[in-house]
Structure formats: structure tokens, C-alpha cells
Image (cartoon, rainbow over all chains, first blue to last red; front, side, top):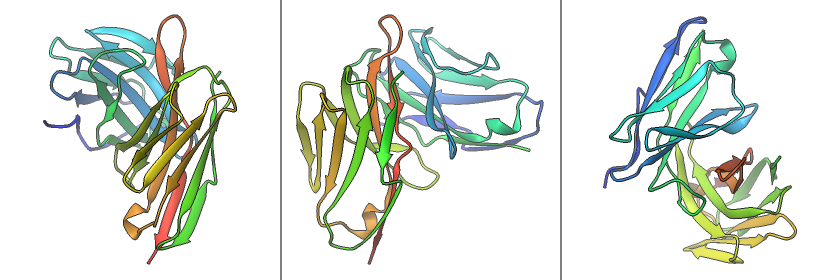
Length: 114
Length: 115
């Protein structure tokens, strides 16, 4: 069974631009969560989508948004990029949403903002 | 607010040593705890998942324990090998508003095993 895939793997953007990252979950998984990883803050939860609905949201500004499609694929968008948005963005999928369901992580998208 | 701390931040050991990585969390009302491995620039690989009702889990040379009441977990790696070199992350799943749950991560321990 294929794992979680994320595209693109690497991205370089300029301050003020916007960016869209994509995540394809493991086949059959319906929940997708997004995380931001930086050297200073570590791994922080952004949001979770389940059945095309945002279930949970972390403490990030409104510039960070996401959506999920009917095939469970998810996209994350960051508008008006800032230098501090440079990070590894990780996506994780689980069969369903809830505390007992283990999350499986993708390889991440490395975003560099210049 | 749940906070997860991992000690030490970095550890360097010679090949063959047994070692222990520590993880502590501030809110003992967790549902499970997970240990991950992350290689440089890569995603996370799940190593062990311990449910809140369990005391330990084992997989090969890895053993993770959980003491929920004291807010602590340890990851024991036996007979370490250079291929074990990576960052090890601890994460706890706990309630996050209403009926939602989220993973809160520690900042990790960078392990280097020297041949």
C-alpha cells in the first residue's frame, strides 16, 4: 500500500507570495492533518480535515488555510508569505478521526521563503 | 495547555551501547503516546504507540514505557547501531477543545551512534 505523498518536495517562494501544498493520504484514509516543523518551535499542529470538514485547528494566523477534497486529498495554502514561514510542512493521514487512530506521516514539503 | 519536553536534546554514544531517551508531559490526561524517528530532512516514522492503559510496548531492540501519573515516558534502545542515528520525537495525544484530539510533540533528541 502506498504511503502518504506530498508535493512538491521543495519550494522556494518570495515574501508576500502565496503557496499551495498538496497531500495525498494512504488509500482508504479519510483524515488528514498538517504540521509545521521549524528548528525553533519544533513540530506544531496546524489543522485536521475529515470528510472535507475542518475538525480541529492549531494556533496559527488566518494566512494558513486548508481544504480537503472528496477523495480525501488535502491542500494547504499560505498567503502573504513571511520569512518565518520557512519550514518543513508535514502531512499525516489516519483511517478516521479520533484519538485511537494512528497517524502516518508523509516526507514533507520544504518551503523556503526569501 | 499540554507541553512535552525531551531530555537530552542531543546524545552521542559509541556503537553497542544501551541508551535511554526521556520524555515528559505536563498534562497526564493523555490518550496515547507515540515515539517517532526522523532522519534529516525527512518525514516521521512511527516506532511505538502506547495507549494510556498500557505500561510499555516493545519492538525489536526498542522498548518504550509510560507512566501516565508522573507524566513520563522513556524509550530504551538496546545494542545501538550507527543506523539508529536520527532525531527521536515523542508525541502525546490529548484533548484539544470539545471532542477533538491533537498530537503535541517534544522538540526531539538528536542521537548519534558512532562506529
